[in-house]
Amino acid sequence: MQYFKVTVNGKSYEVSVEELTAAGQVPAQPVTAAAPATPAAPAAPAAPAAAPAEARQAAPAEIQAGEELVPAPLGGTIVELKVKPGDQVNKGQVLLILEALKMENEIVAPANGTVSQIFVRAKDTVNAGDALLTLRS
Figure 1: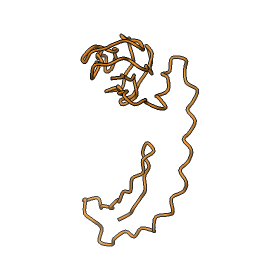
Figure 2: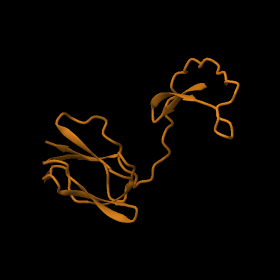
Figure 3: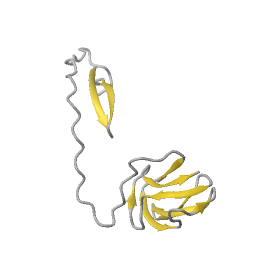
Figure 4: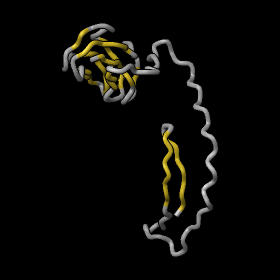
């Protein structure tokens, strides 16, 4: 059994790996692992490459108390924004249109509130979980 420390998206995990033979059996001689090395200081994140002009804005550095983040449910391209900061919205109201898998998906308000901040523009590409906007209760 070998033990490794793996970092994924900034979060560290300790994993163990067991070596199997071609038939899927544990080998007769156990694999000995060297003691894990002392973890080095985490490397600074790589600087992002120059983003094109239509790239989305950065996610909020800080979400204020009383604001609810509306994340992208899946990756895709923003087609149209239906609201602007300061707009009152009701639960279920369409906030924006997200094209994913050649389908236009309506992203709706999870609750009643006021649009506080918008982090995307039309034609921006987003990944699942990216911040789209915030609503203030």
